Length: 490
Image (cartoon, rainbow, N blue to C red; front, side, top):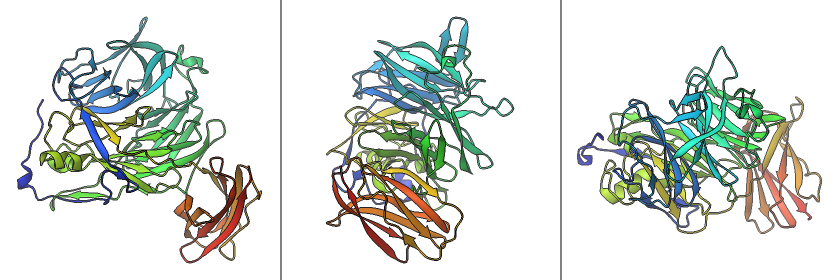
């Protein structure tokens, strides 16, 4: 394998980034436990773009080396830096491809960019967002030492006149499958929601079914990541061009609406004084139980020392997009080797390019290094915080232009477990809406400096995970604050 190497001492490097370094909420720190060594017998063998975990130290890596036409799956069991790989692969082999084969039906893995795991009975299934001519979602089953075809696939083409490549994939607890289409600076991406193979027969015959929902992103750009909460009521999607992550609320039956209360955009800049790179969001993953949104942020296929000097995974509050912490992969590499492009066996992969991540049941995080040709396992030194997912919807009521900024008493009150808060915005403002305990402790931010045009709105607050008692909700438009009391009575 050949990788560009630049002496760091010759490079005057300035990286402007957020000050949170491998921490979450200021407590504990992230540690890279191991990186699969980039050499036989444990290497992925080529550029590694995505990972799907099915248990601690058990995961599948997706290799997608576009220049060399390598598209294949690599399984790991009881892995560490030097062991765990299942099967034998030609290291750095051009043209190495996984085939989906079922009877006379054959599909080549082509330009695949993301994978997702789903457990069905005793089978560990891997769903691949593939870009063969039919843009299939391909399904494979992990065996003792390799992968075999699982007789499920589904074409994602819903517009025969404009078939779009697909990029990211996720699956909710009911088995519904979410994929994104590629876009660019002139065209928006879409989110396609397909029914579960348990309910849609087209997965096993015919292989064509209309999406349950089609969501068009509000801006042009490329949606490289998608993730959904287990219930399928909140979808997050990244846009590399705009550097934003969007949040949609709703369900697969009635549709989804863009939630304006969630705001996150990558503002980091990487520069050496001559060249400037603007990194953006790639893969997304939602950590159940803890309700933390993980956002992989990297530069756009920049295999240079400047590109390797940046690579992070942000931890976000799923309700409003505020930052809880960050795993700084590039900084970890440099602090242990003195360079950004050193691939040291053990717990340093080098060549930071964290395009995707996933979790195991113990909340360890598995992060790929695309140019490091590795999968890295990270763990947090303390328990991660649990964030209550409280957002449901924000709805504009009519077209009235209010005379003043105001908030009504929530209704019902007392309530159990949900209540509605209506507020009026007299002019375009950045609105924050927070819930506090009577002692002044922040419970949750429902809206966090979210842009609202003039109008009357209502938001539903779900307090099912809170204890009975009195709470204070406070709304702020940047100029004034209004507070009211509400009572949760279970």
